[in-house]
Length: 633
Image (cartoon, rainbow, N blue to C red; front, side):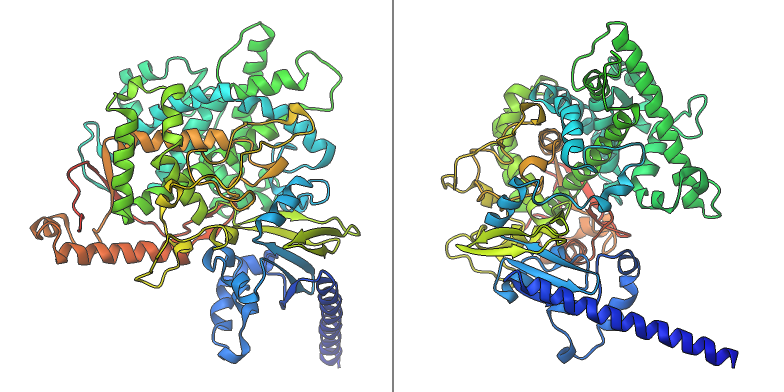
């Protein structure tokens, strides 16, 4: 009898849940249709925590369904569909904005530049869905995880740190660490030709070390720098603090270990407070918990040190993020302010997080694309040679050389990588509950219901309406031009589609870096159609920082080296040497490596915060220019 009662209760609960879900779905379908847009009905929320955690299990099982049972809804079950499918769902529906209805919510996906511009310029009508950013408040409230008047306060606090005058330090620091990176990859003499099995890890280090120095006055020494102690001491002169592999007194992790462990495993911080994580039976939890505590200690020490310097009248040049934040907060002068120390630490963390991962990804993916596309890499070599004129790196300057890099092939490579692999594939916006918002598209009016989660979709970067193929373009492999890595598209001899208009901020204190997302000398996309840094008021405040950093490392690498796909999996160095240069044997093994790389880049990546290779690597090699092994006519 007891068993029967339990089973009856379970059945009643399941039935109630099914009926409730059906009613919610019917209500959301009706609401979505009221927008006037095309609607795709989904059985559940594919961006819910449960589905995000378990979809690799269920998707292969659902894939066995008969083709007649599948449709666009099945394609959209993949949370990364915007990266894997690009513009195809929009093309299938015949619209650049469509709605998705499931039992728990309604969503809108946008791949129309006109609509993107309306959404990003009406920040009060389309706020961020802040619940998605709560996990970033580890050390305090910050620029990314706030809205309204609180966001304005944080924007005013952080904007002065990203002015144009700070970019020279970023440029010089990027040159230094790029040279360190190449010594790591090619040996002290720069002539070792060894396979780099996990370049992503090293580009992450590079970006971490640049933001640490440029933003916080912390010079993090590379392991091989420490081995050359005298040289390292000469190079790190001028840094406020120096951290290497040694663990300072009072700490359990060195600086780079604490920061790296925290940033690379940030998802685990949502499991509980760090004090609890350190007591977990799982090593990864204990490591992350310790890293949260340790990096907090480092930031607290740097904060107090900088506060004491400013109080004593000491000033520093360059970005000096902590100094700018402290001065702008009013904390030092004990002014009446809503800001607290936690706000400064919270913004310091978010700038460190955003300032390293996205930039590292762009560098990593650009190297891979260039290794797969020799013609583009050769043109990059030629452009760098022309613009830098063979000057030694020590004579490069931000004022003279960055504008040249930003107006040529280096910027084209960066822009094209960001077009294909935008770090955040769906930039989240929303409409507030009970506040529907109208917008226009193609001369017609539509209404997004209140409570809609809106995604500015990376598929817009592959919308042929904005990214035209060359005249007489003909694909030999079935790949659409919009899906192809072709940085030369940015160099075409066309006039800009429109004049640049900087954001018309309603308060000058909100201004971050001025200037265009792309150079005026390059192809000018339609406003709203190129959004790797988002757009409008909430566009990336560190945009110019990232651009300077990426182009500096390109210049260091490709002024001296070529990058190639490593083929160790398919042939040894000795076997390659025996193959005729430019012959079919070399072409065959290179193609195997290229096919593998292409598959991983187009089909297997995933997002935690940004889009990255997850669990796979694409090995590469650097060789002195003129020593390339895989050149084919």
